[in-house]
Length: 229
Image 1 (cartoon, one colour):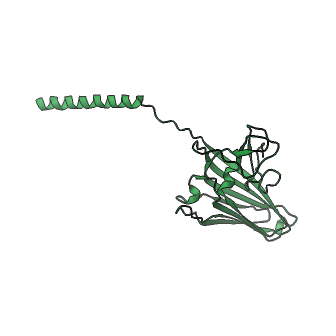
Image 2 (cartoon, rainbow, N blue to C red):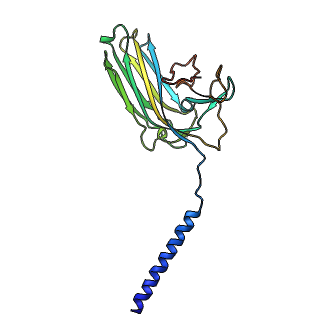
Image 3 (tube, rainbow, N blue to C red):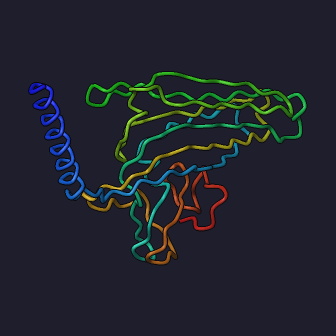
């Protein structure tokens, strides 16, 4: 009996200690993250006319330059410093005079680049279209690859889009959708955009083409947004 009473008191003491520990833990202020994380789907359009094929490689800086904030009428900085690509989708269709017999192909290649021993995905995904049937590509970066990680707006090449058509005189339309997880980093100073703007309103935020070029010169303009710098 005496042993049971001691065991019961020990269990009770342990419960009291656990209650005290929970109370102390509840009173401790948990750290608050000052970084802002935002998920966005970016959409761009490009038109290829009079050429048989086009290959365009995109750098990490192309992504950070897609969303900007104006500090003056011409000066713009990147709205986010860090990002991670979740998925890319491509849709290609022909709209020329010989559409019925036009053949075309679209290929998305995740680049190989090695950055601090982290290898690129090094995969290609292709789809062919014919006539009124579009080509459609959908791909996510391989887990553990460079493209699957958070990264800054560097000059590292992340992916390449290649399109070709059998009738060069046709017009080939390419729609690109990129799911991106953007994040701010308070430890970094604001990063200026690759190219200046014109006629902007200070304090407003803007979209820019996938090639980081301004509205007047971009070959990959954003789609479905109002403010384009």
